[in-house]
Amino acid sequence: MSKVKIGIVGCGNISSIYLENLNQRFKTVEVSAVADLVTERAKTQAEKYNVPRVLKTQELIEDPDIDIVLNLTIPKAHADICRQALMAGKHTYVEKPLSISLEDGMMLTKLAEEKNLLLGGAPDTFMGAGIQTCLQLIQEGVVGQPIGATAFMTCHGHESWHPDPEFYYQLGGGPMFDMGPYYLTALFALLGPARRVTGSTAISFPQRTITSEKKNGQIIDVEVPTHVAGVLDMSNGAVATILTSFDVWHANLPFIEIYGSKGTLSVPDPNTFGGPVKLRLAGEDQFKEITVTRPYAENSRGLGVADMARAVKEGTKDHRASGSLTSHVLEAMHGFHIASDENRHYLMKTSFDRPAAVADQDIY
Image (cartoon, rainbow, N blue to C red):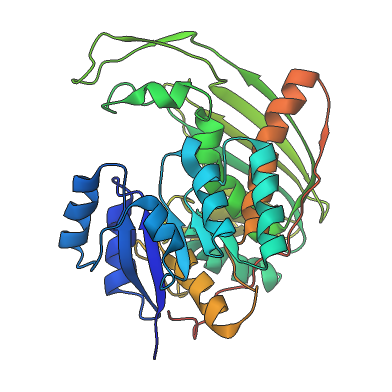
C-alpha cells in the first residue's frame, strides 16, 4: 500500500513525537523530508528518525513528492508557511494555533477552499481514547441533554522553569492562545460549535521575573492578558465557561466537566490522549471511573495528520482535525479578548460540522 508522504517544516522540540509516531507507528504515512531554519537541527532529527532528505523550506514546500506539509514552526510563522504550502498545492497541517491573527486564519481557510486542499491543525488530542469515550457517553445519552460545561487551565506562568519564557507574555502568547486550543477543541468536539462568546481579561502582574537558570533575574514586561475568563453560548443550547490563567498560584479544579440533564461527566486533561473519565448520574453519591475502551490512549500526536492522510487517499474532505474546527477555535479565542476590550458579546462568524467519532476500525 502506497503511503502518503509528509514534509515537516520546523524541527524543534515538538517535532520529536511527530517524527516518532508518523514514521514508526502510523502505517499510512511516512516523513520523506524535513526542513528547519537551523540546518543542523534538521539534520539531527533526520538522522535520529530515519528521514531520507533534509531540504530548505522552500524546496520542501515545492517538492512534487510531498503530499502534506506539516508546519511545526513557531506561532508567528504559522500563517506564512501555511499560505506558502497551500499556494504550492500542498495539503497543510499546522501546530496550534492556526495563526496568531484572526484575519490570517480566515485567509488560510478561504485559500484552502479555493485551492480544493485540506487544511487542518492541532490539537488532535480530542481524537484520543479519553475524550472519544466521553463523546460516546454523550452520544448514547448517558448524561442526557448537555446543558452546560466548564473548563479550567490555571498555573502561575512559565518563568520558573522555561529557559526562554518571554514569548508567553508577548503578542501571540498568554494562557488562552497557549493552552486554550486544547480545552476549546475538546469542548467543541463534544458539544459542537458556539454561536456567540463573551469574555473578561486582565493583566494581574504587569512584570514577571524569570527564575529559571538560563535568564535568572531578568524582567519580562507583560504585553498580553494573563487571566482570561470566557462564556460560550453553544449552538445546541448549552452554556459553557472557560478560565485560562497564568496568574493563579494554586487551584483545585477539574479540567473539563460536561453537565447534562441526567448527570455530570468529568473529562480528562485535554492535553493528553487517555483518561481518566469519570461519571456521576443524578441520585448517585460519588463519581465512578469509566473504563476507557476507545483506541489511542497513549501519546498519539500526529493522529490528526494520519487522519488527513486517510482523507487524501480516499479523495474526501472529511477529516477530523479540520481547518473549520481550528479556525472556530481561533475565532473563539479572539472573541473573548474582543468582547472584553469592546464591552460586548461577540457573534461567531465561523462554524463546523462536529467531527465524527473515531471508530474501532480507524487504526491508522
